[in-house]
Image 1: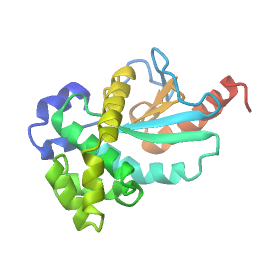
Image 2: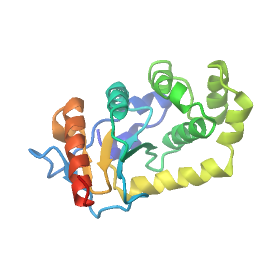
Image 3: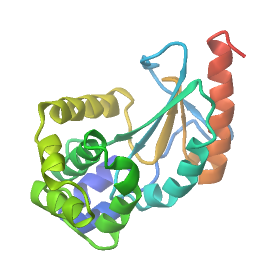
Amino acid sequence: MQRRDVLKQLSAVVALAGTGLPVFAQGAGKGFELVSPPQPTDDKNKVEVIEFFHYGCPHCKAFDPLLDLWIKKLPADVVFRRVPVTWGNPMLTGLARLHLALDVSGELPRLHGQVFDAVQSDKLPLNTEAGAIEWVTRKGGDGKKFADAYRSFGVQTRLARVEQLGRDYKIQGVPTLAIDGKYFTAASIAGSHEAALKVADQLIARARSEQGRK
C-alpha cells in the first residue's frame, strides 16, 4: 500500500498496520530504481545505506530480522541508518519521535525490534508521549532519561531532519533501502526481502566503484 492510502486509513494506531510496500514505475526487471534527483550523503568516503521504515508497517516488521543479520555483515566502509517516515501524519510522527528518543537514550539496540510487536500486536499507543514513556519504563529502561530525550531539542531537530529526508527522497512506501543517495531497492521491485538485500549488496559495490574505490 502506498502513502496516499496509508494516510487515509490512519484514524487509530491499529490502522498503522495497513502500510505496504513501495511501487516503482520503472523498476521491473532491474531490482532497483534511481533516486531522482540524487541526494547528498554525509561522508563521501563511505557508502551510505538508509532504510526508510515505520513501526506500524507489517512488511517492515517482517523485514527487520533479515535486515539485522545483513547489517552485521556490512563492510567497514558502509554506513547504515534507519530513518522513520512520517508523511506529515501525527501518529507516524509520534512513532518517529519514539525511535529517535530511544536512540538518544541508548535504548534503541535493545528495544527497536520489540516496538514492532508493541505497536502491531499489542496495539499500544507508543505514538504518544505518555504511552512511550510508560512502555520504556516497563521494559526496564530509565524513564526519566528517556522522557528527557523525548522532549529534547536535539530529538526535535532530528525529527525535522528525518521528515525532510523522506520528502527529499520522495518516499512513497516502506520498507525501502536507499543506497548512497543514488539507488532504491525494495521487495516490491527485487521480488522479495532476501532479493532486495542481494541487490543492495550489488549497489554497494557499484557505489564503491563510482567513488573510485574497489
